[in-house]
Image 1: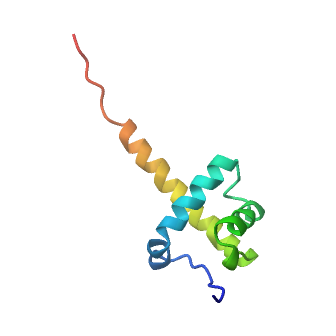
Image 2: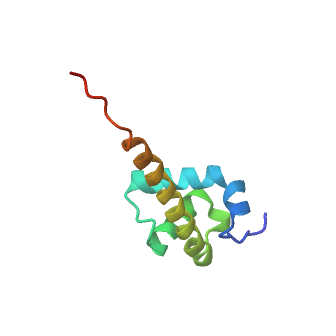
Length: 87
């Protein structure tokens, strides 16, 4: 299977959603820094060894950062629910 270049596009992100979720979960459970190209490169060697390149790691780092921002926003939205006051 030939190496595929990662893209920072809606289409690529949608097509590779499961890989992104798996990578984010692995990164958080292993204590890896998604802002670090070196850490993301090591992560790619595990989850997608065929496509593990420094160029793909740089792009995938940005994808993971966007994913993390989405997760954070999702949880912040649930926190803003007003509490009921019971008298």
